[in-house]
Image (cartoon, rainbow, N blue to C red; front, side, top):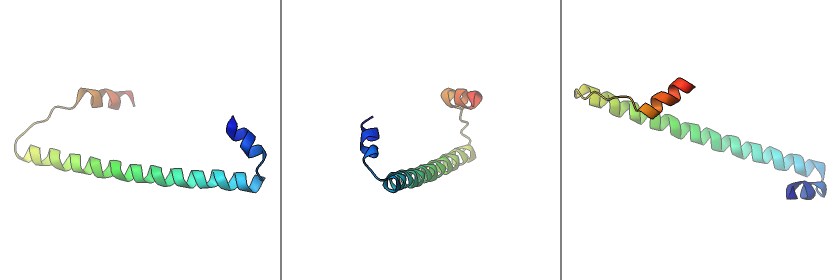
Length: 71
């Protein structure tokens, strides 16, 4: 609501630039987050593989199983 009043006083090109800049920033942040998730997933898989080599059997986490089933 406050933003609408502020944008009303700004030139259209400036408003467009503001929103494009915001989108670029958010896309970069999303990409970084996805990169971190991939690294975490790879590390988890590596630890699970090593435990399986040692004969340890892991049971799937019930909350993770519920999320996988609902997706």
